Length: 271
Image 1 (cartoon, rainbow, N blue to C red):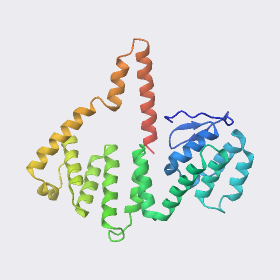
Image 2 (tube, helix red, strand yellow; image 1 turned 120 degrees about the vertical axis):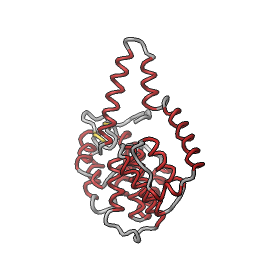
Image 3 (cartoon, rainbow, N blue to C red; image 1 turned 45 degrees about the vertical axis):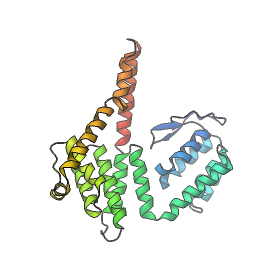
Image 4 (tube, rainbow, N blue to C red; image 1 turned 180 degrees about the vertical axis):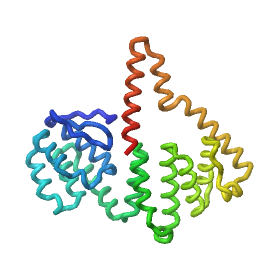
């Protein structure tokens, strides 16, 4: 999970597979860490028998499992998550209070805000397809008048970003254009221009082209070229460059490892 966790609880023989991250959880501390830091990835079906069986049989926490089974459906989802964290004792009382406050704040925000925040979180975590499905829940069947203009424009914009990440550039252009039509601004206009730089086959919508000045176009081309030049030695390209510097024995091993990681990431991003 990217962080070292010093564990003290029972280690599972058969781990709990956290599908959202594509990782196995072996201890109560790891389960706590997953809930505390990735709660935005969790759905209502997280609190199901598969988790309860893992807690009971693998972590050997029969009392906690019994409590969860008894209270499921009787108390809120947020309270059950808190019960798990409290019984495992990985986080301090202050941290648990802050965690529960975040959950309560989400529940009071309103359905639309929570769905959008979760969609944004999923996209940032690399789950673009799942994020797009949530954006569509907000947009499909909704009247343009039922949601505030600023909120609606943001949903269209963020959906466009998610589409661009999976190289659905034509669809992304339509979403950026819709966002710009609702609330005109340079951010959406610049994003549309950048898409045409990335994919010359795309054309700017007529209204957007009319609103664009030659000075803006020149400035944004300069910005785009700078970003492109810097990106050459970042991310996956940088990882490959580092692998190629290894000796003849370690080089193929590292390249094979990178390929496996990228395949796993691609599979996870398919939702």
